[in-house]
Image 1 (cartoon, rainbow, N blue to C red):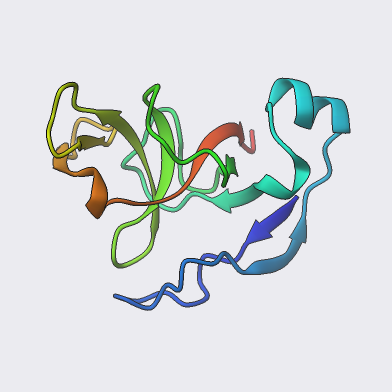
Image 2: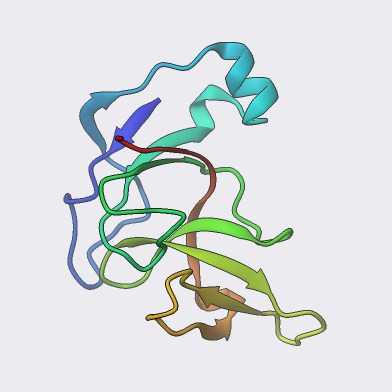
Length: 135
């Protein structure tokens, strides 16, 4: 799996919607990819975590594997999104019976507030499927 270089193209409005490969790559067994992650190899990217908004689940320095073909927040889960400044991980929950559809973007760290917005406003990059952490 390629690792995305999240430093490239950073800055407000600069992201084109495409992930750019860093020089790093990750190897996973094909059976793990297809059965545990329920994905195709070309649909997975590794993303580095920077910041504490998703602690204790995700910490700065962790790596999360995202499925870029899984972008609908049903069921709720951890997603990487473009927030206008950079790529960030958030828990996204669909607001039932909302018209037009709305979602809640949640940080797991209680120091950060949740944010409700139109589903159309959210630029989802992919759904989190796996995390790696240094001990």
